[in-house]
Length: 216
Image 1 (tube, helix red, strand yellow):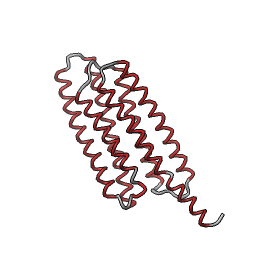
Image 2: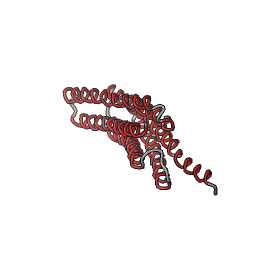
Image 3: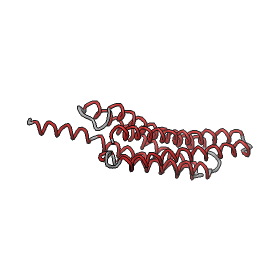
Image 4: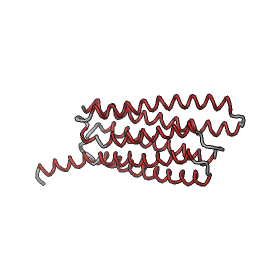
């Protein structure tokens, strides 16, 4: 094997992370679109069906995460620090896990009616997922697109702040006006799970920003 071919193998290993992160983001986006449908639905069967489909995307996400881990173990050279790759993969996996947890609560608790504010939070989670696709598509050109990626990270951070405001307003109104204690607990737990999901999206953006700082 000549030296040029040997170095080319390193480059292939290095670039193999990029499509895996794009696949992760795209898989997350599919789940987030279903989360909007589920929080918008009042039909118990549809809620359960959508929770099952989100679970399938979570399973797919676990498989992609495992591939990233294996490539990380096998790679001699990596495009970013190994620890950064690992932490970003973990954060994106946690984002999808939180989405799954939220959908599971909707399917189990079956609140009496959809809430507009919870639908709004799901829509913002979906927007954050879409931004993750745009971010990961630019990992291969991170130096050139560092400002663009940083701007997307800022958008995700602002989404988290907006969701916090919606969550606080929703909880205040819930405790003031919901007379049914069981319904109150159901809605509170669902809202908290959705808010936690938004928090993890911010963690993802922070991990990406750290990578940008190190590599631009």
